[in-house]
Length: 124
Picture 1 (cartoon, rainbow, N blue to C red):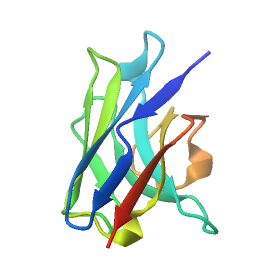
Picture 2: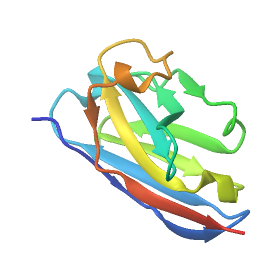
Picture 3: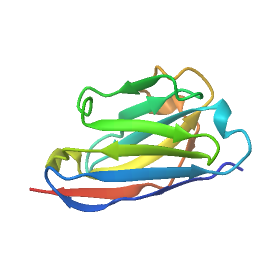
């Protein structure tokens, strides 16, 4: 069974930075696209960023482009999300997810495994 465990969330002031990590179980981590999504209270889950199996291709939501960076370390089965210049509207529970397929998708239903989420709160 695939397990994804996020860490690194917390409370930060606007303009600050956080680094989220997601560690996956299993031996075939490097075969999959990985993504980050977020969900704020009362809102639908929304796409944040995705990275191809090799790490050579990345894809970002317009709302985070230029501020967030997704990366992965296949030797450690981890995917990271470096979040800079954080804004109060970035406040949400952040989830990592895995899919078998192309990295150029922002649709939550295209991802098949999800972590439990980590809370990010940005104060103004």
